[in-house]
Each structure stands twice: as C-alpha cells, then as structure tokens.
Amino acid sequence: MNFSKKSPWILHYDGSSCNGCDIEVLACLTPLYDVERFGVINTGNPKHADILLITGSINEQNKSVVKQLYEQMANPKVVVAVGICAATGGIFSECYNVLGGVDRIIPVDVYVPGCAARPEAIIDGVVKALGILEERQKFARKKA
Image 1 (cartoon, rainbow, N blue to C red):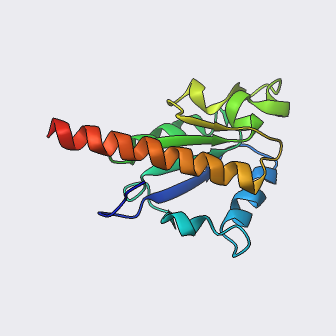
Image 2: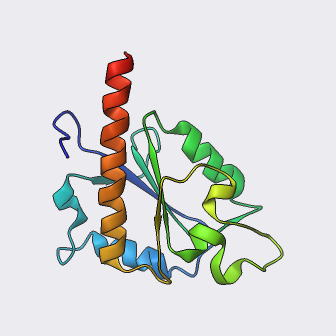
C-alpha cells in the first residue's frame, strides 16, 4: 500500500446495534491494536472520509442517514460493514423496523464477520479496504 499523497480517513457510523462492535472498533484505536499505524485517521466529517465503517443493522430511521453519509463522501470511497448485524441484520433481523444489512441501502466493499467482531478482524477489514481504495485511486488517476 502506497498512500504517499494523503492518509485515508475513516468515518465510523453506528446503525442500530448492541454496541458490541462499536466497543471493538474503539479498541482498534487503542495502543494495543493501533489501527492508525496503517496511516488511517478517524474523522467525524463524511466530506473528509475515504472509508465508511458501519456497525449495526439498517432500520427505517437510519436508512436516510446512511444514504446521506455515503453520498457526502467524495469518490473514490470504500464501505466496510463490521459485524453480522451490518452484514445481514444479525439477531435484530426479525425486528419490525430492521431492513437488514448495510448492502440493502448502499454498496458494501468489505464484510467483517463476527458478533461482536474482534479488533483483529476489524483491522484486517480496514487493511483490505485500504487496498481497494488504493486501486480505485489508481483507476481515477488513469481516467483523469
């Protein structure tokens, strides 16, 4: 991975989850796991983000928020669905207001398995997302 121009920024959004995966995402930022060693920076602004990291399922209340966050991100961008709830709706999939996983609303590039997803698996997903982002950046430069 060669991100010499800009460090990729991650936007984390919690859908409707139990917060188990969110706690593990926060663990990735601690010195024990240190996801920032790969050059990523956590941000709260979708206009600055390159990677959208989503935990939890999609429901009627958050589907428009997820769409809006995705649309506000500049291209190229990558979406990472963390945990079984973000992938399929998980244990909440039979709830009356749950629509399912993130891919019901926006395209997902990387799925991180687990309930709750382990920090090592989340970091592996982020590294895969960095590879996808790098390829998309190369393609965008060739196109320009």
